[in-house]
Length: 184
Ligand code: URA
Image (cartoon, rainbow, N blue to C red; front, side, top):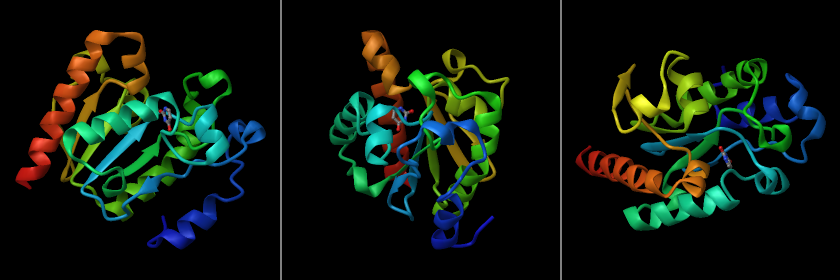
């Protein structure tokens, strides 16, 4: 673990810890306020993110941006990262070995940011951060507190593109997050 961003960012530059390195154009490290109270964790970069090296800039990112706007949150105020930092082929779910290889980078990011709230976007984020026993359908919208951090699991924005009803729940969960943040 590194106690500063420079060393952490340098340590990942040539990462070859898993096979996702073979096809990447860019490592999508994460972006945003490095002292944010609120952090978002997604699954992994898609094609647009891989091209630009920035998380959530494609279709799912547009939804995130709309949500931020609706909540009165500026995107640059929060910190955004993913379970894996290189794009899985065809946007498949990251394999166990890929997630495990990458997770220490994310853990280090969480330690440095010190967020009060982490929104877990979808099943991959939930299972890799809080444990395989958790399911997103049962857990979304419910706070889970661990080691002084409050976690809010919700749908991954890509799921909203496939199911309109999930939009309502996603919005409700993020409203709950914004309300809590305002009280902190
Ligand atoms: N989906 C994710 O989970 N992360 C991104 O950065 C983009 C799409």
